[in-house]
Structures are given as C-alpha cells and as structure tokens.
Image 1 (cartoon, rainbow, N blue to C red):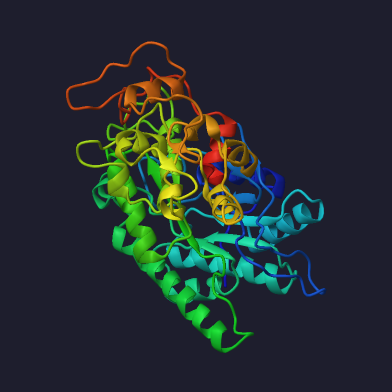
Image 2 (tube, helix red, strand yellow):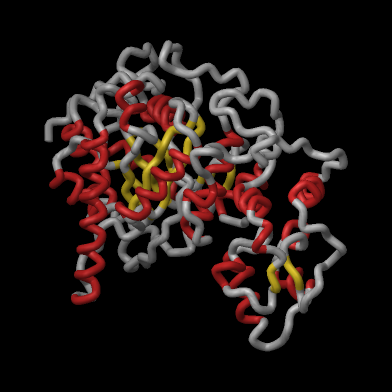
Length: 449
C-alpha cells in the first residue's frame, strides 16, 4: 500500500497532537478476553481486564489512547478535528504506532492500545492503515496484549473482517442518539453506514463463537466484543430516548458496552447548544448508572423513564428514584425475596445479592450479616426487613425517605403530578453545582448500585 502521509514532524510532536485529539473518544474498557502469551511474543490479555486509573473527570485511563490521524474529510459540527477547523494536523505511520506501543509497553506505561482515527482521504484508505498497523503489531512485533480499534463506517467489509481477526475489541461510534441529530450535526455521516459494520461485527462474533464450539483452535473474531459511543447533550433527545436507543443496541447488536460522552463545546456553530454550566457530566453519570441497571439488574428503559418523566432525577441515582416511585413493593424481606427482586433494592449490588442468596441457605440473616456481605445499609435500610423487622423505625413514605437519603431536614415540595425534586434540564444545569466526584464516577463505571 502506498502510504501518503505528510512527513516533517517528530514522533513526539505527533504524539502530543494525536493523544490530545483522542481525549474525546471514550475508552473506559476492560479487556474482557483471555489470551495467554505463547512464550515467543510480548504481552498478554486476561479477562480480569486492563489495570484502570481514573482521570479528574472520572474517565478511565489504562491504554495508549491515540488517533491514527486527526485529518478528516468530514465536517461534523461538534468535532474539534472537523475539516473546516484550523488546528494542527498530524498522522502516524503504521511503524510509528507500533514503535510507540512497544516502547510504552516495555516501560510498563500501558497494557494495551486504543486506536481510533479521523478519516484520511477515504474510509477504505484509513481502515487499511489501521489494519496494517495491527497486523504489524501482532506478527512482526509479536504483541499479544489488548488492542481496541475503531471500525470506520463506509470501509470495505473485507478490511473490517481482517482487522477483527487481530483485534480484541472493535467499536463503531453511533455518534448521536438519533438519525435526525446525525443529519443536523454530521450531515456527511449516515446511520445506515454506521449500523452496517456494527451488524457485520456482531455476525462475525456469533460465527466465531460457533466455530470455537466445533473446533477448539479456530481463530477468534473480536473476542472481547464490540462497543459504541454516543455524544450526550449536543442534540435535544431526552434521557428516555437515549436509554431506549441503548436498550435497542444491546438487544439487536449484542453490544458489550454503550459509552456516553458528555458534549464538550469546542466549536462555535448555530446548531450547537449553549452550555453555560459546562459539559453535562452529571447527566452522563446518571446515564452510566442506568446503563448498568439495563445490563445487569434486569430493568427495562420504560421502567426507569417514560414520556411523562423523560429525564433522570439529578439528586438521586436511577435505582433509588425507581424505588421511591414504587414503594408498594417495599419493604422486602431479605430472607425470602427472590434474586431478581433483590437486585431492585437500593444499596444491594449484583455481588452482594449473590452472596445473600448463598448465605441465607445456611441461616437467617440479620442486618449485621448484610453489612459484612457488603450491602450499603445507609440506602438499603429504608427498603428491607430482616426476620420481619426494619433496622430502625421508618415510615414508608416518599418524602420521609428522600429527605433522609439526601440528608435534607426541610420538607420537599410535591407537585400536582406527584413528581418531586427539580428535573434535569437538557442543556442547562447551572443551578446545580454538585458534579459527580471521582468516587461517584468509579461506582457508576463498576456498577456499584
């Protein structure tokens, strides 16, 4: 392949530009795959995941996260690297990405690679460069660590197939929740072109799993599954619409993860919203919490939100908010309730619910047992009984429980429609300053609900 990449920059200068350009691409991923080194190469990937650290805004950092290029033929209105922007441009060569990955790995800076890209010349040209990079890493450098790459919408299916045989995880960015939003802010991109590679990757994963059941040493295609990303707050969709889209993606495309990226205002454009309060990080945080409820807690999007209540409560996490709106189910007797209903109790996560089910086979549990198991009693105590008794005298009333959960002494105002608390505004939450802390974001990322 004739590589037409402008020379004249050092690899360090390129790294400075292209690592900074990649910061808006979410990469909070674990490997989710087992692949032991064969003793001849370098690195490995284990299902335990990449070692994580967290940035100040709560995002997970663990990989060498770079763009192959920030050149782009598209002019998406929300993107810093859009064609019409006057920003420093750079492009790596496959050899340079390989050199960076291997040298960073040897220094123990990273445990894997996250490689995304703008569109250089054409989708096919860019996808071919990404494939050549991953191919060299796996064959010439014998790198057996974790690799996550972006599939380029519009690229030839053969290139995506070949790349998927070398990568651990692939992702195709949905960009915006709805086709209407895409037409408004990214007129060069089309939902059909985005969903086509997503469907191809899903089919490839299914076929690969089937082949592995028959042939033990069959090649693996994207063994850690695929993910996608949506920008939140750039277009006027409600949280209910966003969660419905995510639920649909999980059901129809068998995604491992949907990532939500709070819109950052980096361009001036009449079609972009004003965000006087900055990026909607709290809204992003609530969406991640709700996403865990969809994937692991048995909730449906329509249970969490609806047309009458389209946005999440900014003061309470989605699980607590659901429980307060369905007090007819509570309190639940911890020694009798089934596993699925137990997952709906605030303060009880998947692991603690599993431990409770196992422990109560041996004896009846009390509140001290639940604390040792890992139940967050400061939330759960309002919704459970042990052996027919609550932990303290508690009124099963929405206002009373809410004030205690929020540590608010004054009575909360109720509206005529039964809704309490301020509802999240789509573009303006400047009146609420309490952004999620790093601990909050970690809990959302790890599903501790």
